[in-house]
Amino acid sequence: MPTALTPEASLAFDLAHIWHPFTQMKDHQLDPPVPILGAEGVDLLLGDGRRVLDGISSWWTNIHGHGHPRLVEAMARQGAQVDHVMFAGFTHAPAVELVERLLPRVPRGLTRCFFSDNGSTAVEVALKMAFQAQAQRGQKGRVRFGALKEGYHGDTLGAVGVGELDNFLTGIFRPLLLACDRLQVPEDPRRELAPVLTGWDAALEAALLEVRNFFKDHGERLAAFIAEPMLQAAGGMRMWPPEVLRELRVQCDAYGVYLILDEVATGFGRTGTLFACEQAGVAPDLMCLSKGLTGGILPLSLTWATEELYGHFWGDYTEFRAFLHGHSYTANPLACAVACASLTLFDDEAVLDRSRLLGGALREAWQALAVHPAVRRARTLGTVAACAIVDPATGLPPPVEARFAWRFHRRALDHGLHIRPIGDCLYLMPPLVTPPDRIREAVATIVKLLDD
Ligand SMILES: Cc1ncc(COP(=O)(O)O)c(C=O)c1O
Image (cartoon, rainbow, N blue to C red):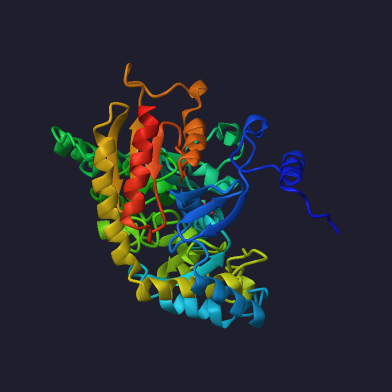
């Protein structure tokens, strides 16, 4: 039986034995991990009594705030009924209810839903499904994938293979990865608060031509093309044009390539609509959902597919066409029940309307950053606001050794804000129910820290 540790001993034990994600553990010699004692509404309560706004929704997951009583209650109720059961050969009410409730809300044509546990596995499933479906419809030469440069789809090897290799220091894995051709898309200046639109029409035309040329070169060999619709989040909050997404849809259709939209970060109201692809009027062949699916409190993910794609897996057992993939915790009933309760909250608490209000407040408050000398290209999309940080003297991004992101994150905690820039990209992505005055406070804090 472990002894109850003092806070200091607990931290020492953590540093001695726990390996944290996305962390150079040596950094923790100076700045140990911050103990979290509580999470309430849109705030995190730190071990030393500080209360900070969860300005990035705990890695972009949180929708309704922390500890929402209806989500907590749904989890407890389900736990007392069926906690977990394997999902091969069994089914249960929370999984059926979740799919029943999402079916009318997902983009048209998506009718089949596969469960897994996190964003990366939802992507792995989509990639494998696309590849297997192509092979089983006689397209065995389609052994490559298409993806956007500066994309991110998770950290498992399949997902890394279709992500940007240089941004995430994942280049080391290059010899192990899927064959992937990458397409650069421009950022959309219309999202900026002070946009310069001269030349934009021509740039957009050029981007559309680039898509067509990419498919001319690669289209015949691709099983699928994967993209984060409208927002390349981890790639630096790159907001890209809906016209280009529509052209991707057209070209995928023309070349028989499945279009996978990864809505892991953008789904569930984050960009102002339930799914970001709605803003481009595009429906994919496969769609990945996770993060906000459970309101951000339990791990769960879905990969949605069309009837056409599903049909390529249908047959007698001895044809061996089945999709042989599954995880121990597939369709965990607790997570499904919480996801259902989260969808109820979307209706009962008008969360999409609140997300649009928050988006408006965020854009207004972000004006204060747009004019700051250390800021370039301030922009917003729904409840995501981002900008690039530069050294005002040189106009250049802070050098890597300045550790801007890490230092800013730590300083902001002292001022009541949890924020974690990606390189020189500073952004806010708060829970969708964050009150506008908290947003104004957070932006004032950022301005003050940049002034300092
Ligand atoms: C667009 C996108 N896809 C996939 C993932 C991977 O999700 P997870 O971290 O749950 O594996 C992320 C995570 O940030 C993401 O932003």
